[in-house]
Amino acid sequence: MSITLSDIAKLILCVVICQLAGAVGSVPNVNSIPTWYATLNKPSFNPPNWIFAPVWITLYFLMGIAAFLVWNKGLDTPGVTTALILFVVQLILNALWSWIFFGWKQIFPAFIEIVILWIMILVTMIQFFKISVPAGILLIPYILWVSFASVLNFSLWRLNRL
Image 1 (cartoon, rainbow, N blue to C red):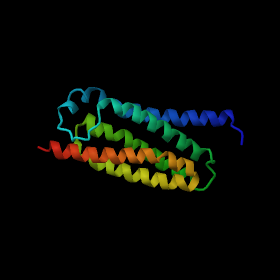
Image 2 (image 1 turned 45 degrees about the horizontal axis):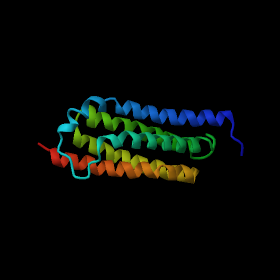
Image 3 (image 1 turned 180 degrees about the horizontal axis):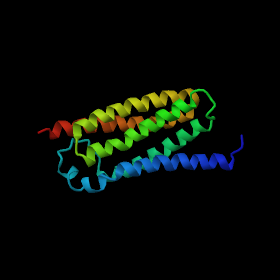
Image 4 (image 1 turned 180 degrees about the vertical axis):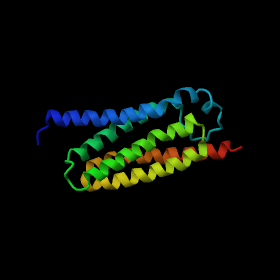
C-alpha cells in the first residue's frame, strides 16, 4: 500500500483538528489555573500542573492518527461515517469539559460531563476497533487518562464542596 499526498493531507488534517480542540479547551485554563484552581484543595495524587499540556498534546496527536486510520478506510466502508461522527461528538465533549470546569468553575457538573465523555470515548473506541484495530488501540491511552481525570475531578469536588 502506497501513501499518497491525499493520505498525508488527511492525516495532517485529523491531527490539526484534534490539536485545535485541545486549544479551544485550553482557553479558560490560562487564567483559572494560577488563580482559582491554585486555591482548591487537591488530593494527594494530583499531578503537577506542568504534566497536563504534554500529556494532552500527545493524546490529541494519537487521537488524530486514530481518526485518520478510520477515515482512510473510506467513507463508503460500513461504520466509518458513524465512527467519525462519534469521534467528533467526543472531541466536542472533551473541549467542553475545560470550559465547564475551568471557565465556569463548576466542578460537579464537570464531573457529570466527564462521565458522559468517558462513555462516548468507549463507544467511539468500540466502533474504531470494528474498523481498524490500530485505531482502537491508539485511543486506549486517552480513555485511561480520562479515567484518571474523572477520579481527579470527583476528588476535587469532594474536597471542595461548600
